[in-house]
Amino acid sequence: MTGLGTIVNAGAIAAGTAVGVLLKKGMPERIKDTVLQGIGLSILFVGISGALQGILRPSPAGLDRLFLMEMIVFLVIGAVLGELVKIEQRLEHAGGVIQKRFSNDSRIADGFVTATLIFCVGAMAIVGSLDDGLTCSRTTLYAKAFLDGIISL
Image (tube, rainbow, N blue to C red; front, side, top):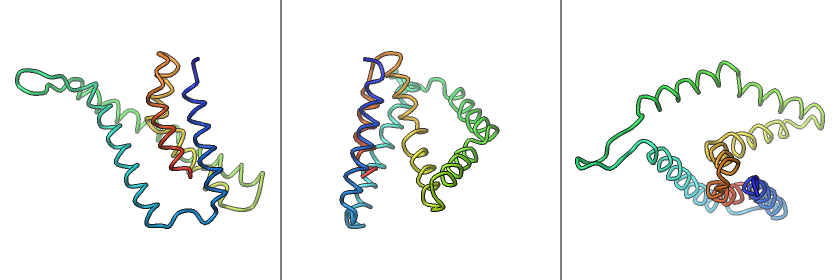
């Protein structure tokens, strides 16, 4: 079923958040820091291996780099387009609208922007969703669901 990875990921985020709210006091700060550092390393590994998978090819002389210039050009184009359409400012504006609508508590807007940036606009979310929709491959979104569930806790 197309979209199952997205449903699993959203469920993991909701479950992690619910457990985190129930715990209230949460984990000790030192445990949180260590867990988040481990998750950060995991995400770095996934990102680097995914990027290298498409641009490195074994050869008799070692590894040949493919599409290196294209990668640089598209990273620059993506950064420029993101700034031109003012993605970050639009997210902050949406958070402000939500804040005004539901409460005067500034934590709601901050939480919305933070959650959007963490869970919705990362490379794993975009590539995983494309993989799920185009090829029914859910591996990336399942890994993201596991990481997001822990992060949201």
